[in-house]
Image 1 (tube, rainbow, N blue to C red):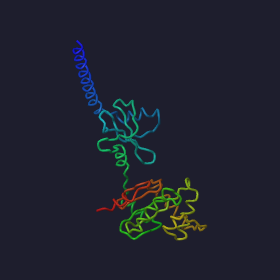
Image 2: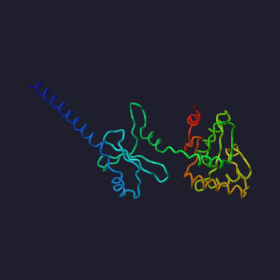
Image 3: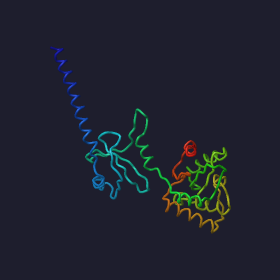
Length: 258
C-alpha cells in the first residue's frame, strides 16, 4: 500500500510538472509574438513621465519578454523590458550565463554607436587646437582642461604618442558649468600657443586674447549645438565613430588594425 501511494504520488508529480511545462511553453509562444504597441506603452507611461519617446518595441532574448528602446534627452537611447500585456516593467541587464555576455549592454552599445558624417568630421578636423604626435593614426580628442577623466585620458594618449602609435588632435571644450576655470585655461592655451604637455599640467595665464575667446566660443557652439556632444572626454576616430568617456589603449588601437 505504501509503495502504491508512493507510485501514485510519483505519477502525480510527473504529470503536474509536465502540465506546467506545457502551459508555460504555450504561454511563451503566444506572448512572445505579441509585444505591446509603442503607442500604448507611451500612453501608459505618461502617468510616470510625460513625453516619453519610444523608438522601437521588439522581442527580447528572453521568450515572453519584450524589449523597449527609448529615446533619452541627451540623444542617447535606453532599454527596458516589458511583458506582453504592457503592465509589468523589468529594468536591468540580461546576462547569458553560457557565454558570459551582458546582452543588454551589447545592445546598448550597438544602438548608441554614433558615426559623424564626412562633412562633420572634416569640420571637426579644422577645429583642431593642438596637434600632438607624428603618426598616421589620428585620434580626435575633445577635452575640458579641468575634467578629471580627461586627465586620465591624457596620460593614456601621452603614452601612446611617445610610443609612436597615434597622433592626437585636441579640440578644447571647456564646460564652465562644471569647471569654473576651464574656459580661462582653454583660452590661455590658445593665446600663449601652448601644447599638449601644458594642457596636461593645467596651464593657465592672464592672457585672454580676443582670438582665443572667439575660437573657444566657436568650439562650444559647434561641438555642443551642432554635433550634440556634451561630455568630456570624447574621442572621435577617422571612421567617424564618437566615443564619450574614458576608453583604454586596446580599444583605441583596435580602430587602426587592418
